Picture 1 (tube, one colour):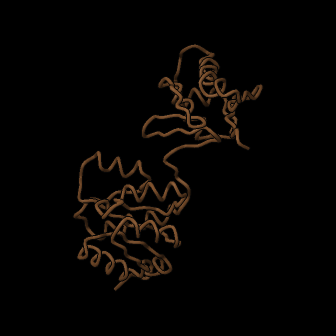
Picture 2: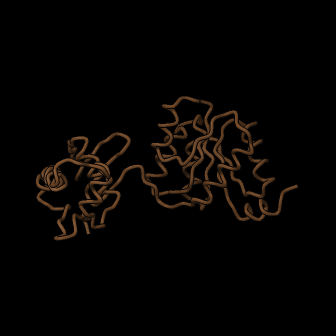
Picture 3: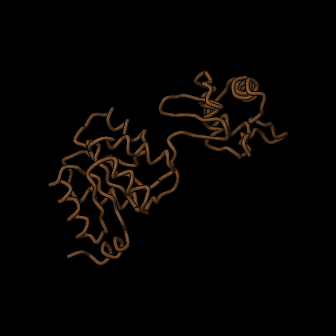
Length: 237
């Protein structure tokens, strides 16, 4: 018998299961329904994208090896459409590269087959607590974009080459766009707290960044806030 806490938690929760192997799909679906989840089930990537974009699911359980597009492509497609439903990806592959590919596509968690059903439930509950807040795999501020997986930066579609430290500094600015960041905060997070190099290193590297991301485009995104620090602004507002 279900405990009252689990039964109460699952009521009203709607899950999309994407699994093309009929026996596995049946086992997972029945197990979820016993826990009082409402479950829709599809067996291919095309239906997965359609259902996930047309219905307000609380979570997706997405197998990687499904008829095209595969699970990784489905996840990337949904994230590109700003569908942020939490995704638990299932796979029979235990390779690190496969897990990296799935997570970089926007999956929130990964479970390798065969698995204990109790673990699937625990991971699903964790994702439901997280909710569907935006978690873009590519950072975007105005015309500027940064892909952490490929270490690629573009502005207006044009690739910008950066040194490793310039890249780290820009990534921190983009993760905190619209905030005024002090020099000490930038040193602590981009260099480290105990940095003991030149005192004006932040100013120097901000200058380098401006030469890369602003001056060629004749538009300033990286602003100086006198007496406070620096600010990265959206140039399309």
